[in-house]
Image (cartoon, rainbow, N blue to C red):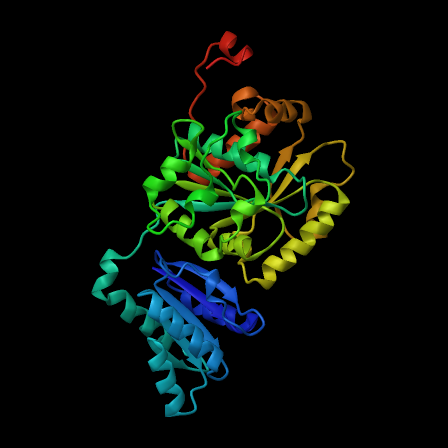
Length: 390
């Protein structure tokens, strides 16, 4: 099952997480905090969530309204409300709004576990939504860090080296250019043309996406800013819900500016890869970005810091940078400016154009670790490798 928690404080979030993850099984968890005391349900994919857990000191009218609107529009999720229930009136108000389980505070483990068990045992769970793929989000901590380059090339390696079916979605709503890193072709259909369609399905996505290779597809950002007008967070939710049923990996290329659309995409991601370079302004930007991620309630293991263009000539060691940002660097991509620039200028993946580049090797290793698949061997002749022949 997929269980989402929106807690009133970090302490309560940690308490609920501790109870749920004692016996996690195959459950997936999303942990978030209230924003200015409000639930903000638009951050959650309500279609795929089985249980939503909320807590509050007292039952508020704002919570009742949000819950009522949610339950009117969605059969999922079952809503648990943790609260100091002082009156029968408060309990009745929660029930009328659509709350499935009202659990008294202070929280007792068995109360929450028993409620989860009751939902698990319901017969309709046999047909519950199951995602096929994982969502990976790449976001620069500061403009120009190289997130788009890494996202597009990781997608290529997952598709070609690891034989995974991959969809890259360019979420730069103003002047997205992810396609230029992979091809010199342009599609006449973009994300803006399909995302607002009623009844969006995998067939529509497949028709709109550019085919980069047999396993790799790219959905372009709107061709101009005005074409993104009217796209809201729920549209992104719907798109991702459909996409992860048909692809092994959905890679999101996200602008470093955090707005409602980007926050929803980050909420949905299984892993977030914030990208920086070994330069002081990027370290400062990364520190701020990680602080925001912490405020949003993202678990530590969801955030995977990427250091791009690392060079032995840089006088900042990885250890010093980790100390500065207070987080371990997940992967360090070496600097190979010539090969990288040639790749971008020609619109050909660096893994195809310069397969022996140290950048290609690092990206390939990352793809293997994420997919659990052994990279396909390169059986081309030496002459073919020299001249970049397929």
